[in-house]
Image (cartoon, rainbow, N blue to C red; front, top):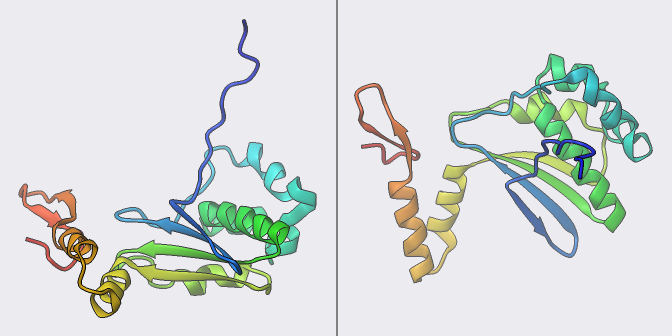
Length: 173
Protein backbone atom coordinates (compact mmCIF):
# COMPACT_ATOMS: atom_id res chain seq x y z
CA UNK A 1 0.00 0.00 0.00
CA UNK A 2 0.74 3.59 -0.36
CA UNK A 3 1.70 5.85 2.54
CA UNK A 4 -0.97 8.54 2.77
CA UNK A 5 0.98 11.10 4.74
CA UNK A 6 4.49 11.40 6.13
CA UNK A 7 4.82 11.19 9.89
CA UNK A 8 5.14 14.69 11.32
CA UNK A 9 7.76 15.53 13.88
CA UNK A 10 6.41 16.26 17.33
CA UNK A 11 7.69 17.06 20.73
CA UNK A 12 6.81 16.28 24.28
CA UNK A 13 8.03 17.56 27.61
CA UNK A 14 10.79 15.51 29.20
CA UNK A 15 8.78 14.81 32.34
CA UNK A 16 5.03 14.92 33.01
CA UNK A 17 3.78 14.77 36.60
CA UNK A 18 0.09 14.56 37.46
CA UNK A 19 -1.15 15.26 40.99
CA UNK A 20 -4.69 15.67 42.34
CA UNK A 21 -4.53 19.43 41.76
CA UNK A 22 -1.82 20.13 39.19
CA UNK A 23 -0.42 18.96 35.87
CA UNK A 24 3.34 19.60 35.60
CA UNK A 25 5.32 19.67 32.37
CA UNK A 26 9.07 19.74 32.96
CA UNK A 27 11.35 20.59 30.07
CA UNK A 28 14.87 19.56 31.10
CA UNK A 29 17.73 21.33 29.36
CA UNK A 30 21.42 20.61 29.77
CA UNK A 31 23.48 22.39 27.14
CA UNK A 32 20.60 23.74 25.05
CA UNK A 33 18.57 26.81 25.91
CA UNK A 34 14.95 27.83 25.50
CA UNK A 35 15.34 29.88 22.32
CA UNK A 36 13.64 27.93 19.54
CA UNK A 37 11.74 28.78 16.37
CA UNK A 38 9.62 26.63 14.05
CA UNK A 39 11.36 25.20 10.99
CA UNK A 40 8.35 26.10 8.81
CA UNK A 41 6.53 29.00 10.53
CA UNK A 42 4.00 29.58 7.78
CA UNK A 43 2.94 25.94 7.77
CA UNK A 44 2.38 25.59 11.52
CA UNK A 45 1.02 28.94 12.70
CA UNK A 46 -2.62 28.32 11.81
CA UNK A 47 -2.69 24.98 13.61
CA UNK A 48 -1.42 26.57 16.81
CA UNK A 49 -3.58 29.68 16.70
CA UNK A 50 -6.84 28.14 15.43
CA UNK A 51 -6.68 24.70 17.09
CA UNK A 52 -8.58 23.85 20.26
CA UNK A 53 -11.22 26.47 19.60
CA UNK A 54 -8.54 29.16 19.21
CA UNK A 55 -7.03 28.22 22.57
CA UNK A 56 -3.97 30.35 21.73
CA UNK A 57 -5.96 33.54 22.29
CA UNK A 58 -7.26 32.16 25.60
CA UNK A 59 -3.81 31.65 27.11
CA UNK A 60 -1.44 34.09 25.39
CA UNK A 61 -1.30 37.88 25.36
CA UNK A 62 0.55 38.08 22.04
CA UNK A 63 0.33 36.55 18.58
CA UNK A 64 2.27 33.55 17.27
CA UNK A 65 4.78 35.69 15.34
CA UNK A 66 5.71 37.72 18.44
CA UNK A 67 6.13 34.76 20.78
CA UNK A 68 7.37 31.91 18.59
CA UNK A 69 9.46 33.77 16.04
CA UNK A 70 10.47 37.25 17.20
CA UNK A 71 11.11 36.16 20.80
CA UNK A 72 12.11 32.57 19.91
CA UNK A 73 9.86 30.89 22.48
CA UNK A 74 8.30 28.36 20.12
CA UNK A 75 8.95 25.23 22.19
CA UNK A 76 7.80 26.87 25.44
CA UNK A 77 4.69 28.18 23.66
CA UNK A 78 3.86 24.68 22.38
CA UNK A 79 4.18 23.18 25.84
CA UNK A 80 2.19 26.02 27.42
CA UNK A 81 -0.56 25.67 24.83
CA UNK A 82 -0.81 21.90 25.21
CA UNK A 83 -0.37 21.82 28.99
CA UNK A 84 -2.95 24.50 29.75
CA UNK A 85 -5.44 22.86 27.40
CA UNK A 86 -5.01 19.42 29.02
CA UNK A 87 -5.18 20.95 32.52
CA UNK A 88 -8.35 22.84 31.59
CA UNK A 89 -9.92 19.63 30.28
CA UNK A 90 -9.06 17.87 33.56
CA UNK A 91 -10.00 20.80 35.83
CA UNK A 92 -6.42 21.17 37.08
CA UNK A 93 -3.81 23.87 37.58
CA UNK A 94 -0.84 23.78 35.23
CA UNK A 95 2.85 24.39 35.86
CA UNK A 96 5.48 24.50 33.13
CA UNK A 97 8.98 24.20 34.54
CA UNK A 98 12.09 24.95 32.56
CA UNK A 99 14.88 22.95 34.20
CA UNK A 100 18.26 24.40 33.24
CA UNK A 101 21.83 24.66 34.44
CA UNK A 102 22.45 27.39 36.99
CA UNK A 103 24.02 29.84 34.55
CA UNK A 104 21.49 29.35 31.73
CA UNK A 105 18.33 31.29 30.87
CA UNK A 106 18.48 33.45 34.00
CA UNK A 107 15.76 35.80 32.77
CA UNK A 108 13.47 33.23 31.16
CA UNK A 109 10.65 33.80 33.67
CA UNK A 110 10.67 37.56 33.07
CA UNK A 111 10.97 36.98 29.31
CA UNK A 112 8.15 34.43 28.93
CA UNK A 113 5.61 35.28 31.67
CA UNK A 114 4.41 38.55 30.05
CA UNK A 115 3.06 36.44 27.16
CA UNK A 116 0.86 34.38 29.50
CA UNK A 117 -2.68 35.34 30.43
CA UNK A 118 -3.44 35.10 34.14
CA UNK A 119 -4.97 31.74 35.05
CA UNK A 120 -4.34 29.20 37.79
CA UNK A 121 -1.15 28.30 35.95
CA UNK A 122 2.47 29.26 36.27
CA UNK A 123 5.79 29.15 34.47
CA UNK A 124 8.91 28.56 36.53
CA UNK A 125 12.64 28.35 36.00
CA UNK A 126 14.40 25.80 38.18
CA UNK A 127 17.97 24.60 38.01
CA UNK A 128 19.59 21.21 38.27
CA UNK A 129 21.48 22.70 41.20
CA UNK A 130 18.11 23.43 42.91
CA UNK A 131 17.35 19.71 42.70
CA UNK A 132 20.75 18.79 44.04
CA UNK A 133 20.38 21.23 46.96
CA UNK A 134 16.87 19.95 47.74
CA UNK A 135 18.02 16.33 47.71
CA UNK A 136 20.98 17.14 49.96
CA UNK A 137 18.79 19.01 52.45
CA UNK A 138 15.65 16.86 52.51
CA UNK A 139 16.21 13.33 51.25
CA UNK A 140 16.75 10.66 53.90
CA UNK A 141 20.01 8.72 53.74
CA UNK A 142 19.03 5.80 51.54
CA UNK A 143 20.61 3.92 48.65
CA UNK A 144 18.49 6.10 46.32
CA UNK A 145 19.99 9.28 47.78
CA UNK A 146 23.49 7.82 47.42
CA UNK A 147 22.70 7.06 43.77
CA UNK A 148 21.53 10.64 43.18
CA UNK A 149 24.62 12.01 44.94
CA UNK A 150 26.80 9.93 42.63
CA UNK A 151 24.86 11.19 39.61
CA UNK A 152 25.36 14.82 40.61
CA UNK A 153 29.08 14.24 41.15
CA UNK A 154 29.76 12.36 37.92
CA UNK A 155 27.29 13.60 35.27
CA UNK A 156 29.33 14.91 32.37
CA UNK A 157 28.61 17.21 29.43
CA UNK A 158 31.26 15.92 27.05
CA UNK A 159 34.74 17.33 26.56
CA UNK A 160 36.30 20.77 26.21
CA UNK A 161 38.77 21.76 23.48
CA UNK A 162 41.64 20.21 25.49
CA UNK A 163 39.78 16.88 25.72
CA UNK A 164 39.11 17.42 29.42
CA UNK A 165 35.85 15.97 30.71
CA UNK A 166 33.31 18.68 31.56
CA UNK A 167 31.23 18.12 34.66
CA UNK A 168 27.56 19.11 34.40
CA UNK A 169 27.46 20.44 37.94
CA UNK A 170 30.03 22.17 40.13
CA UNK A 171 32.20 19.07 40.28
CA UNK A 172 33.90 19.75 36.94
CA UNK A 173 37.23 17.93 36.82
